[in-house]
Image (cartoon, rainbow, N blue to C red; front, side, top):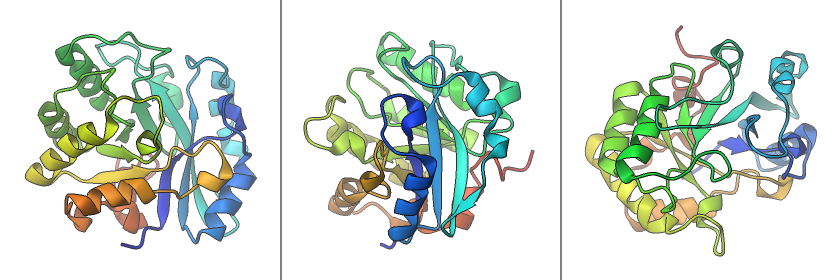
Length: 240
């Protein structure tokens, strides 16, 4: 499978990443990607940028080195009602929006509560992707998660960084397999994200690709091969 886009990356603005927008875009160009999402951590993540950063993204070019840039945010889901840490007014102007559960920002609850956090967040029309729903620290009902994604037209992410040995997320491979099996059963598309925090990791999807190949996951449900297909799910290009 030839993939041409990466929807999930971070720059130095996120506080614990190490590249600039230009460095990330140049790395994407060198890897022959056509599109890259720059999705900085939202304000409740310790060390990240202020909401002013997101309000000012209008000043940044949307193409560098021949690569289209989608500039947006990785939101923190803050509670089981799906509240997130940027206002709807700001989110409406983001090119791409990921929403995730992060340990510094929400206490893990029961599987029912964690699943509710995702499902309520999916109801937000600006949220495009659920980021790395693969961590056993947040037990999830994967059938309900996949059916929610199908209902609300939200993409589920297969996060390459989660699968790197020694990472902080617990049991990601088994959890991803569960999610992917339900995605196949219900014909729900996914997107692979590198979650790159340094330019050498831009476009890195090797572990995610290995997993989808091992379980014979349908290529037609993986949106990394088509910019036009991805754009149907992306805030910037959605029909409002």
